Amino acid sequence: MLTGKVKFYNEAKGFGFIIDDESQNDVFVHATGLEEKVVQNDKVSYDVKEGKKGLNAINVRKS
Image (cartoon, rainbow, N blue to C red):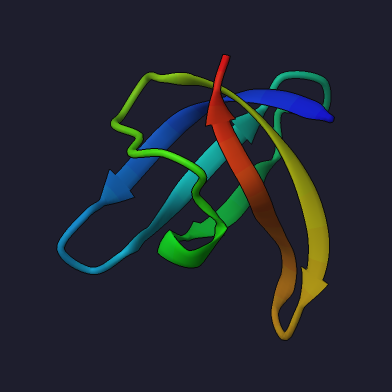
């Protein structure tokens, strides 16, 4: 699993971004990829899968 920090998450729209700890790249996260509720600056662990527009975070959990 990868680790990172929630950069931005809009609960009303159901999406946001995670900053990956290792690469410092943004990874898109959709509400369907969350295991539990997250907010900005939460430390999280997650997996990634290829989506239509790049990598998507899935199985996102607070660390």
